[in-house]
Length: 109
Image 1 (cartoon, rainbow, N blue to C red):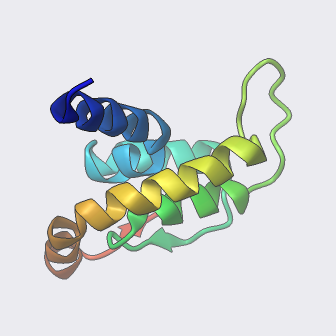
Image 2: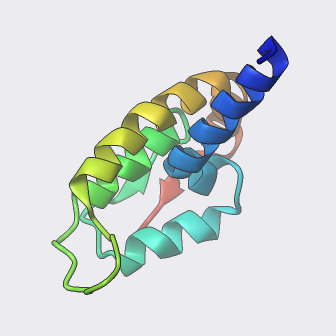
């Protein structure tokens, strides 16, 4: 397997698990805000710098889900996603520092 294919597979795997970063960096702000409001998180805001990790931690800082059949607040997956989001957040750090300075934090309340 050549190096480019390995990098592509690794990036694909990280993007699948790094949904905290995908929700906060690669989608519109209201998507992440609505998702966390739906989970009734206790977080007040999320900084844009390392926002994927903050998003995942806010998922953990919510009441346990009573939804059956859906993996909402499933701790092992969120913990895995924190690690993957940390990697992706580091890669997009220059962009998120710029967005934090121009737009500020994502306000959830």
